[in-house]
Amino acid sequence: MDKELNLETMSAEYVDVLKELGNIGAGNAMTALAQLLNCKVDMKVPQVRLLEFKDVGALIGGEEQIMAGIYLAVEGDITGSIMFLLGKESARHLVNKLMGMDIAGEEFGEMEMSALMEIGNIITGAYLNSLASITNLKIFPSVPSLCVDMAGAILSVPAIEFGTLGDKILLIQSQFMDEIKLDGYFIMVPDIESYAKILSSLGMA
Amino acid sequence: MSQIIKVGMADLKVCKSPDGVTTLGLGSCVGIALRDPVTKIGGLAHIMLPDSTVIRNNSNIPKFADTGIDALVKQIVAAGANRGRLVAKIAGGARMFAFSNNSDMTGVGDRNVEAVKRKLQQLRIPILAEDTGKNYGRTVVFYPETGDFIIRSVGKSETVI
Image (cartoon, rainbow over all chains, first blue to last red; front, side, top):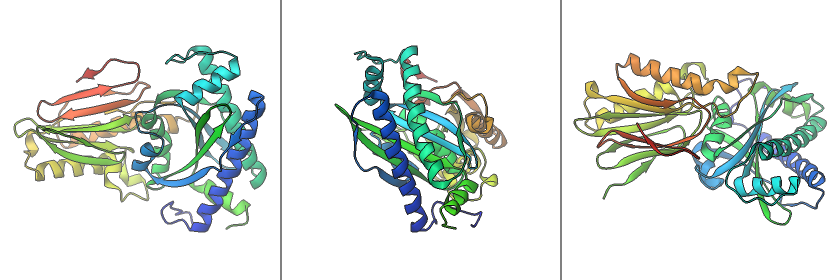
């Protein structure tokens, strides 16, 4: 595959493959979440979008919307990073559920941050596992890092990584529900060589 | 009635008094506010990466510190500002996620700030104030009328530099 891969000029066929991988990954992640919380989690079909940087903020409810972002590096056969983003209310709900608490405060304490990190770890781990088994590639996640801040600021990190490839970002929006509606987003950023590896492992290149 | 002009990610806008210019949720990106204090014409750029010369797909001018600042200066001067009177204030370049390894990924905020400073020095535009680095996001508003650069962050009080 051409090393000069560019997200702008990528064929619709490739984009569809990446979207499908995102779909499967998000499905597995939700199953893992249901097991963790020991409850039924319904999910909508994830929306996979290739978005201009400037439109990302609007999609997730504004650049100043406070969100929790869990970010980790990926090593092995493919390299890059993955981020799971969760709205503040959704994050609060999941933490309360996991820890059996009922707190409504604005701030996340140390224990709650740690619970959130674990939720992120399990969700991203399940996502990457499904990607590894489909592609038969070795994928090792790093220890995750957590940040609760403005959506724009959190998103600047994967956006910058995508920025070295083009002017768009591949965003997988998964909406899921237990008692309340929760909004989560996956952002997968393989580096340029990894795109080629993923596609060729699936017989695409 | 003055209005606030919004600058997106990898974007830049020129602005004249009494209007202001803003960019929301700066993370590792850097916001560069320039102003001619006499004509009160200014502008804001929101850059994402330090150097256009090392990236293959580099046609998006406001995305990079080097080309973005050049373009902002050009547009501000075209709007009637005096090139020699321009002064700068900068914000952003945070390290949003703490990683022990992979310095390439986490250090981009620092590298953005360095690249912006280097570029402004080359152009002999003095930096009057900065609020850079650290580990949190910033929303900034700039008023070319007064030169006030207002910075808002989550859980912190508003500051003006």
